Amino acid sequence: MTRPATLEVPVDSIEVARQLVGQATRLEVCSDLGTEGWTPELELFQRVVELAKPAGTQVFALIRPRIGEIIDGSDLKDFKMSPARLDASLASIDRLAAAGADGVAIGPLLPDGRIDQAACSQLAERAASHELAVSVLRSIDLVPDRERTLQFFNEIGVVRILTTGSDRWKIDSVSLAVRTRRLAADVEICGRLAKVSGRVAIEVMCGGGVRSSNADEFLAVSPHLHSSCRYRGRFDREELDRLSCLISRAGGRS
Image 1 (cartoon, rainbow, N blue to C red):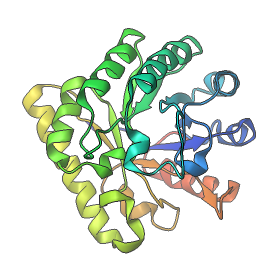
Image 2: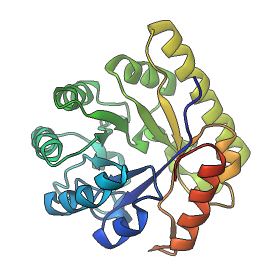
Image 3: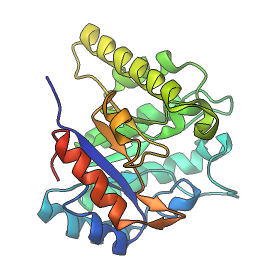
């Protein structure tokens, strides 16, 4: 079954959310996007839901409590799920589900970079109890065993993964051709796992430097894109319009 093309955009302000509604397929609401994003404040999330739901735009919440010293949010330790973070994550899922979330994005890791299966399972179970879909953050690009990790995600019912198609997010040192080959391999693995398990295949969502100038290359591999639509750290409405147009041409809803 061919799925429609989709565009997910991370958002950390109501001002940007207003411009995204009706253009993006899905909003991933977070706080402080500049440091990879954290669990959003409830008030912001509620306001985004109020804007997005009438337009049919999905709203997901990033689940990553900001607890302890944080430098830039992209270090392995920033994805470690301590008992305090786990408790906060579970409580956030409850609150954000009540606020109207369609799903959550998770991705806790162990200190050695492997996915924290115990924490992921608890978070996925809590999300399922609220009938929320589960996405995985691009922390998957930090794990040492990609295929085994995808198998685990298939088993717990993850609907999509966000990935750059590179190791440790080093997109500037890896060619687009290398990235798309990795992404194509992920699509193949997810399809194979789904066929064996009888589940719907996990969506592979391309992220990390996705722009209108390279979107066609990514869309040739997967119909699902994730882009901040930012230029020099600021939201670029024209870039959103260009990406939305490309998604529409690829068979998505704008």
